[in-house]
Amino acid sequence: MKRRVGTVNALHQQSTSVQIKFARTDLLRIQVPHEDPLVVSLTMAECLVRRVLIDPGSSANVMPRITKQVEPIGMVELPVQAAEKTLTESFVVVEIHPSYNLLMRRRWIHKVQGVPSTLHQVMRCLSPDGSKVIDIHGDQVAAK
Image (cartoon, helix red, strand yellow):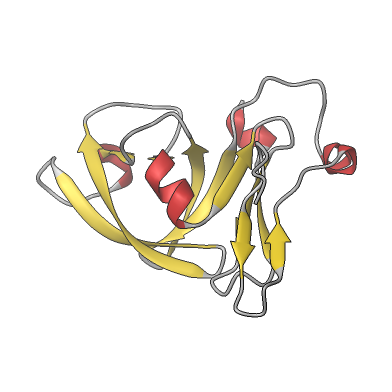
């Protein structure tokens, strides 16, 4: 099977596949040109968290101490809901004052079968059964 950059193929028992793709029409809903990072909202531990940076280059999920009011600084595991999936993720809690409330790492992006596009300001994910594509849209206002 050929693999293309920017797509995720999911094979089903019926030998069908769903592909994640981006098109020029995806650019119609955003302000272009831009150099904005991909910033989304996610539900974590049943709370909506805004200003979440999707960072495919990060090797750790990061949570500033100010976002979570649990002592001490260290590691915390919390359920994160996205693309109809709930995954328990570990976060490194740090004492900083960042622009973002959470930074989601490469491994989490892979676990939700996501393909982020900063250009299109969306992360496309496969549903748990792989039958459809679910979009998590970026928030350009929060990214600035």
